[in-house]
Image (cartoon, rainbow, N blue to C red; front, side, top):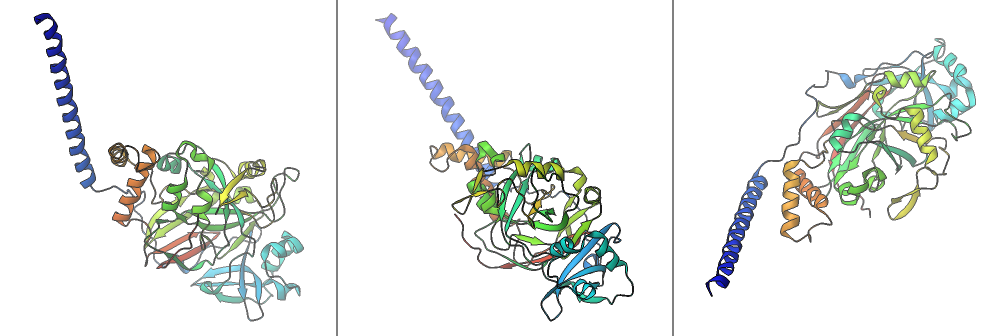
Length: 418
């Protein structure tokens, strides 16, 4: 009897010890969860500079031999193209290209195609031609184009680190361009983020047969993003697949372009020397150095052409990367990617822990995976902290030799998307 009872007593003792240990672990976990939940989330800033006084009064304009600079304005008879020679004190000055050539031009891409670099350079350099001055706040979009463009994700090393994505990727951006000086609405259902980007614009159709073009246009752009929508649609196991990026970045008003359009004589040299800055309420948030792009511009062009028939979701419809697969059609903007300093960061250790605890505590019913659960925690923290763009914020994006954007964030409902 004693020999058979002893193992049972040992088994009961072992079970009790395991039970006590498990209870201790659960209690410790619950305590740690409570402490972590009560702790404030961290949303670090990269830069500490402030915007120089009168920075938005103007930008430097390249000499015509280096780059042609354009703006579009309505001088009373409809849109016309100005060849810009000066931008200061909040005004843009240039030669009305239509008046100078006795040919009607409403868009710089059309004008360049018709006249060529040398003829427009001569117009800009001719001091005998009358100059027209308009308020920078009154210019139209700097080009007139379609709405099927190309976005590039994580094309700067530092932004790869903050987003925890280790290579660049492409996605369609289906959006109409909007004015350089205006408003952008947001509401409490989204997390509105900024992204300063250099846009490369096709002046003619680009294909594998045409190769890298001799000339392209350059434009400043802001690739606005609804981060809450994005994290609800991304595929954590295939981030570079680009799922969710088209929808989160193609909302109405989400492609703001600069007030100037630039066609350099040597574009591959010119774009590498630019510096793009973005300020929120006067504080520097992002500084882009295009010479540091992971994929340079010719590589981006080649990658875009190679995408072929592959599709992405755009509001429930399959969409190819470019409007015509294998062709970068005239007027297409290739956004080259944003540097570090956006509001978004991948969930940190605290958020991943909370995500795991909430996923485990609900037996996985709160989210599809632990990663998705951590992203839910991140969204909750971001709303509570109010760190994303809010009504009343002013976002200034600028670059010498390229142009600027001034956007005021206002309260309003965004259009819904799938």
